[in-house]
Image (cartoon, rainbow, N blue to C red; front, side, top):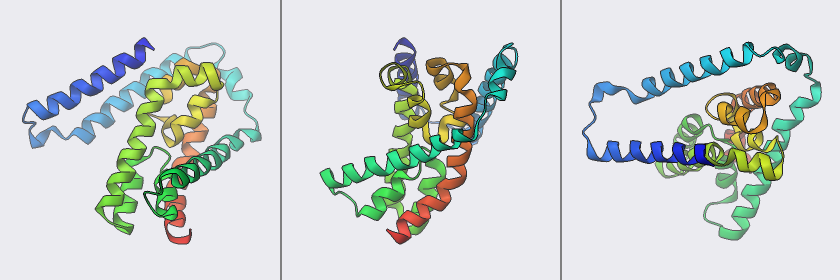
Length: 201
């Protein structure tokens, strides 16, 4: 829980800095975030590669690992359906399309902005950022109370990158491959499922 509080404090500090200070256009925040993410993944990779048991993790991969992204898709669809029944804020197809972003906010928001307009694009952005932030904050609680795969599923498409470090910390290194494959599969499916949900439901 301490790590989660540190994360949210840094996040709030960033918001405060953005409000209080005039950031230069040359800062290129997206590029800076990418560099920081690559550095983080490099450190995680070095740590895992140095682990004598890492090769054993690789050898343990089985085809059933692909049921994890399927479970995430079905669980997200169920969650969106319950949300739609309770609140009915958006048409069902738009609610599902937002959910099918699986935390990949930069891509899903752009797709829905093109398909429907800025309002739905903004909703997709905020909803999918929220999924990522909640995973970063509560992965240890998910793992403790609902199982070691819960942080992987919660992370959605981000389980292969931004939420990977907290997933490994909360669930253990043996879930690295689960998280990576899960994130890759969902990232590939995001543009397909977002578009299909919007157009067909």
